[in-house]
Length: 633
Image 1 (cartoon, rainbow, N blue to C red):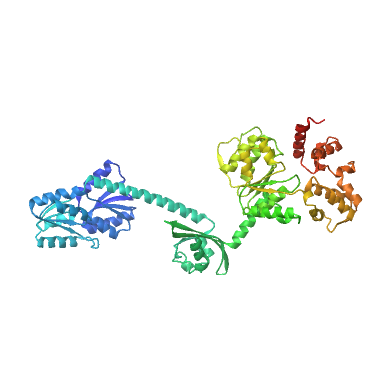
Image 2 (image 1 turned 180 degrees about the vertical axis):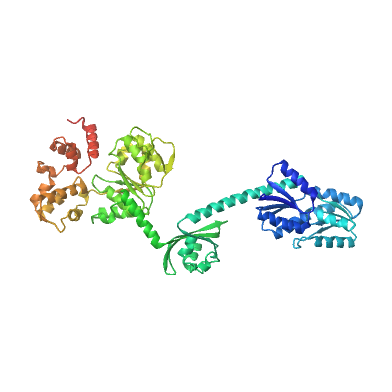
């Protein structure tokens, strides 16, 4: 196998030896070759070298011009400077005043400078590039110059050798060492670019041949210059045409695909019927100097896309990280609730962080799941975590994950945190107001940088997650009280959604009761007028969650589908609870909680259950009451 770069010459032994010695001394990866059979022999040698792997040639004068017209390879000519011609012209002028400079030098500007320096009849014969360099052309040119009275010729090896053969004097233009250096450096630069292009080409071919989509690489006029076998199969190109010339017009895609792509510069999920098959096209225009130079199209079978989406959906459901509810599961026709739903639908189209506020039991997670289901991320996971349910250290490892040996009891294989699990989907941070200041700082960094670091690790992992947070606390008061970071508050509150409590939308209570009774196997149930009046006059401090608990008790206490006032009031109260407990004192919420705690004999789990709130929320509220009133008895 020959070198990638070769210097080649026919009859210039002196320059050949100079180049060979110079390249060897500097360890340039350039081989030197000389043909003993003239220019035509040099042509044959060059073709043999190309078959052996040569891609770049260095040559001088007419040989360079000749090879440029014959070879499918890059040819770098040796260049001359002012003094390369000056010395031989000076020598020729000392012999005679009838001097000619001849060759394929492309040095017209230099020749004009020589005319100013050398007086007399120094004439210049530059062979046109349109003339294929050959010994015959040189012979005829020398003969013509001799007939015109020229006595001495300055030129390259072929010209000066022919001049001497015809009895004329001649001085050869030598190739300088600097010219060889320049050509060698240029050739090696080109070689590096060719190798990088080859690596990139092989890499892109490997990538494109292993993707599961069809692709078409086209010119702006719709000519397909590259495609893979998948695209040919999807477009049902006949076997006789595979690999051959192809245009988008022949495929019937001129108007449906090419025109909109050229107009918009992008094509997104364009469904096209092609030869009886439904295909999905996506595309991008490739620009150079703000002008479209190429088009890249991907094509998929619509049936395959839907099958893949179904498989992905099944996988997410199997993992448990999916949203079970959507906006259709939100029950109510009140203006307050409908405003919240309409706002949430608008938020679903965005990828910005959402903060949902509202009392316990108002349906914050229901809205979070609905937002996810209506968003572009609906096919991704929905992962929820209650920030108040875990101690700080455990919460940190659950949020960000950990590596092997991060702490005592850590899994050997480590564990991904919920942020990683929610990648390409949505994470729901419930009760975010209960997060410690230490963890708030880490959460802020995750939201800003969109990357996490597992506990015990120093590597970062990029994530693509939409964050929905929720709280029943007044976070602005927490910011003023220095228990919640102001920068984190504004980071999570890009979009805010406040959910109304049930006492502010009592017209929704009958609809809510009907839905819950139907869900619990009691459809078409009815309440007496006095029973419904009791339900509507109650404030439901536990909101929808408390209504759910009430319905569960009701269907246990009454087996029929008609509910009287007496049985409803029994279901509204736990056994042993005095009737007055059904109507909390709205003006003093602290007293509501303390009263229920006393009625439950200090049992906090039972107290939280009756109030329709979580144990963590009850614990926090009791801490707040102690801070205001002193230690509870």
